[in-house]
Image (cartoon, rainbow, N blue to C red; front, side, top):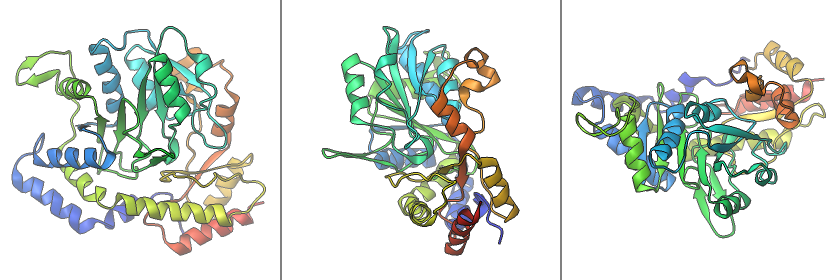
Length: 368
């Protein structure tokens, strides 16, 4: 049996007829940018997330970059200000900060959740700290009441990187809300491999802030809110009509797809029993990635590959060890480094069959 890590064609085949119909409507309309499909998706996704505004943009990195840039235009951030961000993240979170000439301050994650350790945040705050960017990594909510209290106490912006957590929910005794609606603003990626994936690059910003939404939309449209009138030195970052139409189709199935991912993840957690492997705990994660840790990670990956099972490492090199951030290469961030040295992602997606799930489980238990 060959079990691919993430067979995108199989996943998209689940919605094939509706996707083809949606694309045909766009082709027949003759309108390919900033049209009805985009307006519909922005409205549907804002409602789904629970925010007043959704602004479709070109990709997830642009979404985060535009949020920070808009806050700078609004005078709430300035060049050289510090943004606290988890050390364990995909590099896009950090690229958005440095592209705006802001200073990332790296904070270690917790080993049991892979999310930013909220007990370590406050000690990194300085007079230059103006924002915290949390990353809902692997599909698990990173937001905590402690983080909210820190932001309130120090008057910090809270920005969410929701690229991997479409549909994830923060549950507390007093509230239940989706990630992407918990902070001041949130960036979303609809890269094809995401839980809500387009057929190419696409992204969005969600927020309840009217001014921020208007500034983001303007900057992303060459800096213009009226045709040929430019208030900002802008850029071109727009979702196109075809991607918006496809996403509207797949959004209808997102909760059910996430439920299937959780079912597979919980099966792994309940049935994989191997002392060489550390599994994540059960949570409200939407399981964009199912990460396990093993000191014999490379041997495990090769063993699974030899048996026909595809896996991916998220991620082999930590951001502070990348050449593009050479000034950080001597930093010691042991928990982040352990995760990057030991993490292996198992197949976990809505098109996965039960026999594939059971075969991966059997092989995980067979590994020695």
